[in-house]
Image (tube, rainbow, N blue to C red; front, side, top):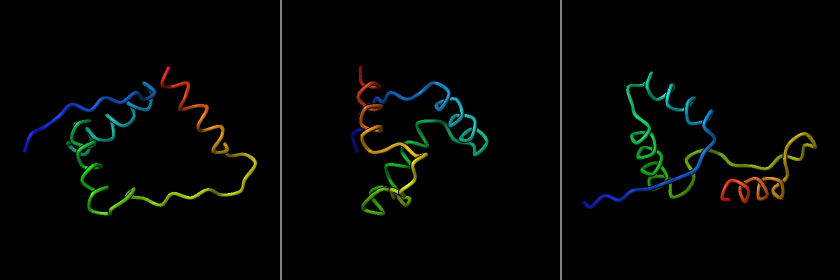
Length: 73
């Protein structure tokens, strides 16, 4: 099976936290991403519940879209 490179922009602190957790599990960042991709295929969707709760303290989808747009700049 041919492989490809996937690039993604994430907050540096988030990346560091994820790397620390994966390291404790004996995995690297690439291993974690491959695991996520495989689970998406196995589940035929996101491998964890995704829901929107009505709570004024949580960001709206509009706020999330604005954040994601800024990350892509």
